[in-house]
Amino acid sequence: MSKAQENLQSAMKRAMSGRPKVGGFPYLAETLRQAGVTNNYWYLPSCQSLYVTGDGAIMTVGTPLVSGMVDVPPFDREALVDAIRTDQAGESSFEQFLAASWKAGVVRYDVDFSNRVVSYFGARGEEYRETYPLVEL
Image 1 (tube, rainbow, N blue to C red):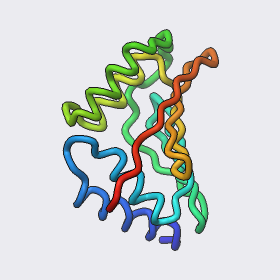
Image 2: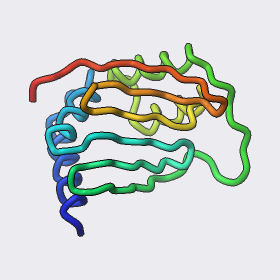
Image 3: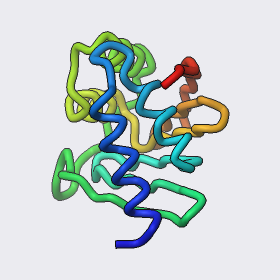
Image 4: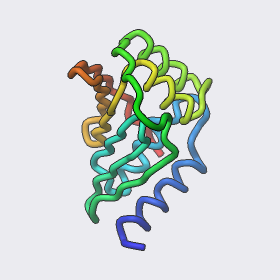
């Protein structure tokens, strides 16, 4: 296991052990930022995630949301915002958030940990950006 992998894995464990149920994402994000993660790129529906760190880049591959050839849902900003707010309220799991984001037409989202911004993208270049609050660990 590389230094980058060890560092990310350790940061993820710390984040999950102290993450509050409501508003957990900013806590996770700050834990990763303090561990040297600068960016995270999620690709839906394949559930591939690229973490860019000071020690190197790491790709993780989760369980895909769909398989085979599928139509991409149209980008639905209202449905996406609803998925985000449901997650922020602690009323969905991460897997449910990913599924709801995909159903809202998100094919990728990027997290910029330095500027605390998440950008969501549709297949036709649609974009929705949102900042998240700074939290103290």
